[in-house]
Image 1: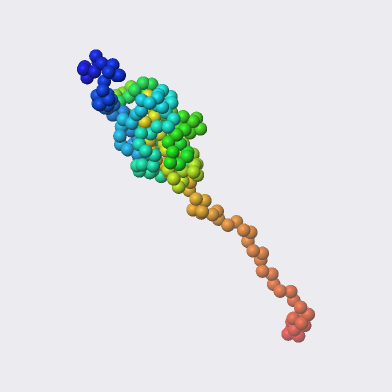
Image 2: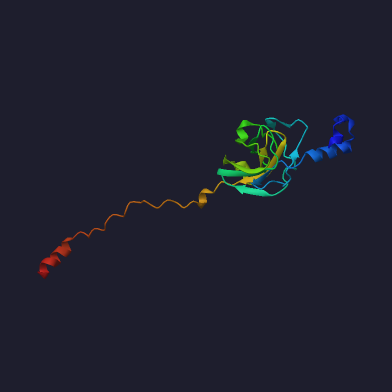
Amino acid sequence: LQWLRPFRAQQLPPLAMLLAASLFATTHVVLQSPTPRTDNEYLYTFDGSCDGAQCDSFCGDAVGTGPVTTLTPGPLTVRWRVAQSHPPYKFRISLNRVPLTDDNFDDPANLLGVHTGTQEYAYDTSHEVIIPETPACEHQPCTLQLYDLYYFVSCANVRIITPSSASVAPPPSRLPPPPPVSSPPVGPRRLAAAVVNK
């Protein structure tokens, strides 16, 4: 890549700039669980929408494409592969709660967690988050975004199914026991018959 140094970016023809970008954009980060939309490890944009702590509406691949993972509310261990680490060595996990859209990942209400990584060149890591009950995401997938607070992202389509209350067994019945059966009262005729029999 020594030949790139004498040139400014604007002096390179578009094809050469694309080639240079592909050379530098080696593998970086990709989700392992939930299953990502794609196993592409270098999804990034230099249009300014992903820079530093901001990456509000970028996932690389078109919304609605790729596999869908079904989750339930509660703890979830998000796992991913870091194939090339970048400062500040932090990763943000966000959940967009509007189905079939890729935006509002910067909204604090959609933040699931921030993970501090290491300066290792390549490693596997994970972070536990709490998946909220999200009725809007039951029938159409929402988007979970992993962002490395640098440029690179990996996204997953997730449906969040809340277990139906109908599937929960009802508690055992605690009705009071029936009253005891009493003997019928003795009438005058039965009393007379009893005296004659004596």
